[in-house]
Image (cartoon, rainbow, N blue to C red):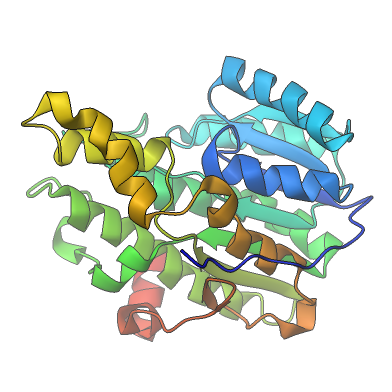
Length: 291
């Protein structure tokens, strides 16, 4: 497929960047490219062994030794707070926060440490809290940016106000698309709140990316009944999906494009602005979700 590649390069020496969920897939490729441009990169992930290995590999690949890992589990508000505190102890600025981590499909309903439904808790609430804890630094470092990974699945989303935590009904695609619509809705509202702070907040659809996330989904759902066909899952996704490198391009575009050219609160896919679900533009929804 013809996927758009971000061709912007910048000298990012001295810039501090956080990427959540950066030990695999899109997050790792986003971190790699920004590290090549000299940025100081902090990977926020929950798998310590995996992340340590990735840090070493990225340092070698990019010839940049300003890459480190601070542990953070988005399914645990205490862990997010601990991450923010440790980050602030070490760094006094933050140019770019890329909220990349996400979960796509958990067949049975599960809860985070704090009792939230897991997909909503990780994809939306965990990042919401992280943004909140780091806003003071982003303001201090302005012009700065927050890039939230949403998804085109937000198009099909509805915020289920009567059952936000999916206690009554747990249907994976609905729960996932609600979480990604919430990210988009919150992006719009946060941008309004930061109108005078010289911070851009945008949302990104990376594309359907061939990564561990999608591979598991396809294996679990499409090939559940014919286990011997699970090897097809890989070629099935490769056929229509993007590689993690391709999937990282829109995040990179939003990280590197001229600050003034980025649309405030914009929703980007394939390195350009896209129309979003009208629900995300509804001010009543924005305020209700925020509150």
